[in-house]
Length: 159
Image (cartoon, rainbow, N blue to C red; front, side, top):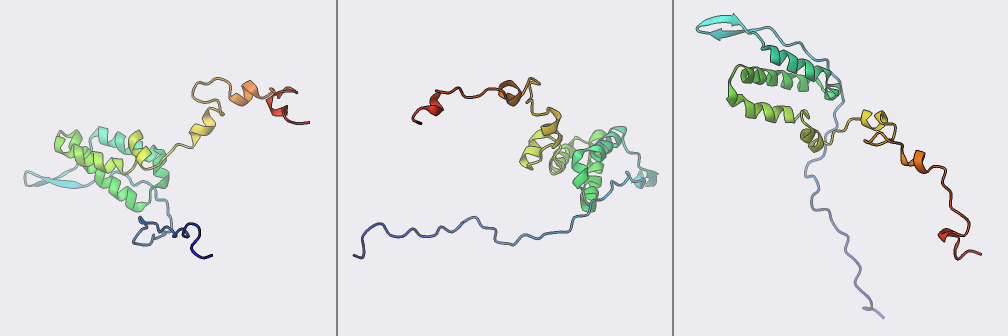
């Protein structure tokens, strides 16, 4: 008899679907450029720009970072522009701090940035050989030889 039972469930439509299709790009890793030499105008004269030593150390830190393995040429160019902001900060221009923070966050500078970008360090799993952060023996090492005794809970009801 028609009409008995609940009506069929309507197929749910995802409401947060992306309105624009994703573009897949060919990946090309790029080598880090050197901090460039250039001149700036100071008091009407062109003078050689000198990178602060702290900015040179900061640049080398990015070159050596695990994130840099995934930088393309546009990433390095953006980071190079960011180095100029870093230099401004280390020359005492404190108004550069907010822009610097926003820019380095895009590269995963802090643990919070890396978590937001869903970055993890692969070596962390192998470094402790499954021992966890305590360095003690793993559960498999502690309990690996234990076996269920006959007549235990798992054997009840059999037979």
